[in-house]
Every structure is written in C-alpha cells, then in structure tokens.
Image (cartoon, rainbow, N blue to C red; front, side):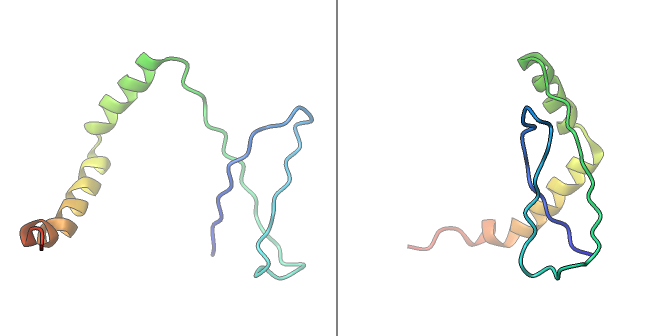
Length: 80
C-alpha cells in the first residue's frame, strides 16, 4: 500500500482534481479518502490544544524516542 498526501482548498464549485503520479498504472483501482480538519477559531483555542499535546502520552513517547536517537550526536560535541 502506498499513501499520497495533497492539501487542497475547496473552490467555489466544490470540485477537486487529484493529480496521480505517473508511476501508478492506468486502470488501477485506488481508494480516495477525504479528511476534513476543522479550523481553529481563535488563538486561545490553539494554545490550549498545544498545552494538551505537551501532556499527551504518545507525544511524550515520540519525543523520548527522538531524544534517544540524538544522544550520540549530542555527546560528540562540535568539531572545528
């Protein structure tokens, strides 16, 4: 399975065109999923979501893994 992401704005006519990469053969069946994200209305709402994200368990695990990945780089220091 291969996933492609394209971000589009909805035009007045509410029709979207999707460009398919040349490496996908003609007549191949594809599944298209439309994900609609709600817009955040104000700055306070965005800040509250960021505060919640910082406490999110999955986010914390991801940050821990990233920190582990860079431990060896951090310990090397800068080379002149």
